[in-house]
Image (cartoon, rainbow, N blue to C red; front, side, top):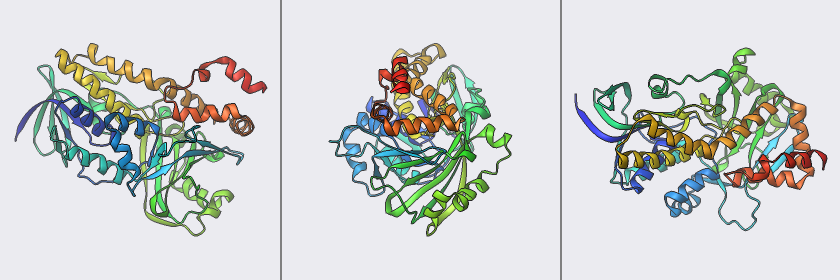
Length: 410
């Protein structure tokens, strides 16, 4: 058995953990990051990289955005198409600025994007990466957290940044956070080739079908003529209605008139895979004595769009900033680490709360139909929805009652 003591241990080398490690290195702070997998590895996801991803990469190194834009494994995306339960669609660009030369968002298989991030870690001498290393047990010892690996190695850390995903053992065993079914989602994903009708500007598609509310069916274009196709549905609804998500997915492909025609000549590549998606529709304490939670381990997935990568990378950046402060102050207590909660929620909570209310809205198909119909005829609403993707702090008018009054009576 070997032992190691570190200042900062990051668990999970996905987008949240990788971002935390890279931003720490930018601060001049070394870290150790472990992952139970060896990269490249697959991850069940919608594969969409929002404007938040671009923003975080720019803050890390502006050249990274230029690099991914030139990467043939990433596809630039210029917007999203919402399809209401009545079949009416609303095409919303990610940006209202026409002069942008680089796409506001991207789409890439997680096996490719995550491996690209991990390569940045491998290239950084300030980061120790331990792949194929699974943490099995956590013990508090003398103002630190001792982590026992499956392989018998002991790593003791002053601060643990837990970014070990939707099924985080750290979140469950140390942070003692339980994921309630009404704040959890099941996502099912498959890859297809030759899906017809994909958008010329690679808009992602969210279809809010009556049989899957509150949830949606998605089609996201990928490089090489592929598409990421899947469904996401809240866990409590799946349980209450005894829904077999795979059969429901197959039924849409076979029986929904608008969708089945597009898959007539499509070929499924690989297996259909299911994964849990812990939603950020509830505020929770996401730090404590000697730890910070990030990404899916912090339950930060957008309740309406299902976006997780952007929020994960943003949380990794904020975690790195807090970790730097903890080291500088020699303070790893919950009373100090909670500044991370405050700063991250200050940034994300208005957006997560709005998404939660929109998720609740789709429980009433007629109301959602109204909003889509209204947006198609109302430029102010279309541009405001577009700003939700581009202006990550949200426009003040979204929080103004007069905006909604004008919307309803215009």
